[in-house]
Amino acid sequence: MGKTLTEKILGRKAGRDVKAGEVVTADPDIVLSHDNSAAIIQEFRKLGLARVRHPERIVIILDHIVPAADERYAQNHKSIREFVEEQGIAAFFDINFGICHQVLPEQGFALPGRLILGSDSHTPSYGAFGVLAAGIGRTETACIWATGETWLRVPETVKIELHGRFGPAVYAKDLALKIIGDNGADMANYKAVEYAGPSAPDLSIGSRLTLCNLSAEMGAKNGYFNPDEKALAWLAGRARGTFEPLTSDPDASYSSLLSYNLSALEPQVACPHTVDNVKPVSAVAGRRIHQILIGTCTNGRLEDLEVAASILRGKKVHAKVRVLIVPASWEVYRQALRTGAMSDLAEAGCVILNSGCGPCLGAHEGVLAAGEVCLSTTNRNFRGRMGHRDSEIYLVSPATAAASALTAEITDPRGYI
Amino acid sequence: MSMGKVWKYGDDVNTDVIFPGKYTYQIMTPEEMARHALEDLDPGFAAAVKPGDIIVAGRNFGCGSSREQAVACLKAAGVASVIARSFARIYFRNAINLGLAVVECPGAVDALETGDQAEVDLAAGEVRSSKGIFRFIPMPESVRELIEAGGLIEYTKRNLGTGG
View 1 (cartoon, one colour):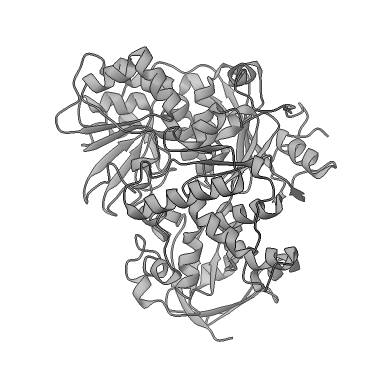
View 2: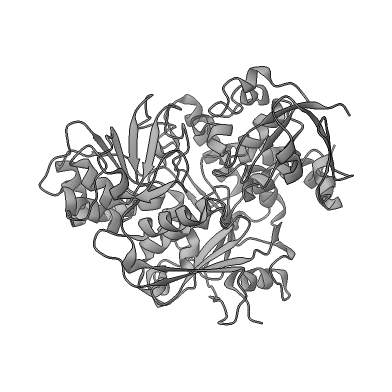
């Protein structure tokens, strides 16, 4: 019987053949943390050690509340900068790089065949490059800083086969929402999700990042694409260190198999207050909205901003709606300046924010008041996430968000592309 | 061990309603965290919860963020255990790492309602309650040791030999 990519990566770490259900001790190649490093440092100090075990495996990217919104956040950032200096952690990215899930691949750490653990639930994003990437908590991160290792259960795998081609104004975001809506927010709890099938190689790296990012909303431990030439080409010139890609065997064993025809999809929306409350956009078209958020780690890459810009170019955002743009990274921000997408968005009346997590978690920049409705390209619409508990969040693609910016109501983007 | 009051909730109780994201990057004391426990799910909970109380919920408890305060705030509020039909993966891991007893016991979830009395015996694999006794598969000894040590920090200190 063959093995999945996940079984192979954990097997290589364990130094033996492993299969789903086993528990292994593994040393992650990279351990990611962000602003929560301040809390992790506090936990690490409790362990009574002077030094972290492997400073070269630690990556810290400030992104959640950047630049600092108040004195407490400023103090957190300061304590992280001091710790990085003290421990000789070279891979530290301050507030001018962007969101960790975009910056970590851009900086060449997300390499095929690697094991990456991160103290953020959307760590599975790096599966876009054939990485086994999973989220963990702060205490566990502190203990890995100390010991270099942790235990992991080898997950079963849900295989999702992709067929056909996206129609106009339909994207990876619509596919991810459709999958979650059909199968529930715990469809892959404790499991891996493999995106495969004849159409998988057609998907852009940005689309793969979106799907792997949203695997977290399926409950998955990790989501991934088998690394191919497209992934390797994207990493060329970025990769830090050597790597050995692994891929699933054709006769690997899966716990379940799903199949989606991209050609049959229409634009989707996740309605309040769960990511699996999904309907076609056409079913809720006309719903009045007050704020739109385009970007972040889910949908803030160049291709996303270009789609939004193509819809808004030469037009004006409706006076009754505020549109916030959050590029996934400063690399993306600069690219979008060069291509003109950013000026198109600014000319249309969008508010361009720093690259960071910002309004997605309701900490600063665009917090919602009671009764307000936000249309967002992010990954969570839980009650109160972006502000008041009586506000509402609808999740959509950048195209749906941009079309809706012209009307101040949820609008089907077909006809605008 | 004495029984605690049951607080019953539904499916997909997520980390944003257990502990809102807007507080996540503020470093708080356990007492401050406890005041925000379940703030956006049950605004009356934090003021009324008593040490030893038990949360009972449906599927996928703790889905969403990896924020550990969603465990810490319940522990700080005195919650002795969370009994659910299932837990989201990172929440389950965080709970064990912070020493909060989390138990998958669908029988107890079906039977118990808010206001019932219950307690959890991890070693015996039993939920004992005013509605009867419900069994679950006991956790492996190593995981029980971790919970009983008070969580991963204490456990790791013991293994590193840096404990006081």
